Image (tube, rainbow, N blue to C red; front, side):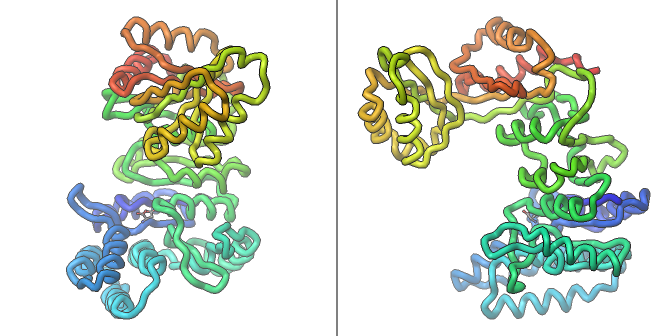
Length: 438
Ligand code: ASP
């Protein structure tokens, strides 16, 4: 059995609904379908989810919601009439509009995007509709309640062999609707793949898999064929986002592969995300990603190597100030801490003062406007000379490296360069290893 999830752009209009039907009917293993709320048709268009959030804000400030609500109405009714569906979506919308005039919970209101889209899709595909509030359960602390979900899901399987379920929300123990974070339908799909012990979880979106680098920086980067969860996490942390970060966890332990596929190009094999990959070296680099605007705090203290606890003291100061440390690198009498400039800014002078005092530092320097770049590959451990090639290529292009970091698991090399060198660094590394895929 496969669980398949369609993102907002895959259900943005009637034409996209037709593509979805084509995909669903070409393989009868595609039994459990999760949908996002209808998304943008064009760049100027709005996602239903965004419009619902906007309705709530308007209502909160006592403004009329009518013009925004009409955009939602129009979008859904156009899909219904174009596809000649029977679902009484007009009544559902009227009902929601009336609820909006009274007091309404934000999470319930916003969840209606997925709910109404799933109603239409259920009608069009002829798949029974199952409300997410009857199968995705949260405890009051927001954690997922797996035992409860298992029971509900097994019960559902006795009633239906196939079903369509709205993504992005579930229910608290008292039945109140609880939303996941934005993009959460990916997580709903992943939870259902877990509950169904699915052979694969197909995540249909509007890109053909994950690319090896940001296409705004590298021209026509190659697509990644297979990526491990660990590699994906490294890349998404550094800004390469294709799927919700939390979507990995429900399928990870069962090693259920996630396929990232394109509704607009269904024959493209996309990218497969797996827990473990048993395979010989296929390529040098899986992907490169990065983020700008970091600061490096360097603490210099003579004879630090003869003392104990200086780094701990510095880390405690950062912890007390709720500042995340992205990376640490150490020398004999100095060490550097990498933090996000944005979070450092409001406490900058005070923090430097505290560090100087607590560490009894001789000197503290802070460099701003730095970018971090992650070069990610599960094969790095087996392949020698990769760092050497990276450094040589950057040296030849006059790119100065401010910091280097690699942990023992050797899945990535992290470099800090100036914000100005950000694009050039990614381009240089990409072209150094380009063409090495088998
Ligand atoms: N519709 C929600 C959002 O726009 C959830 C999702 O699409 O996954 O974030």
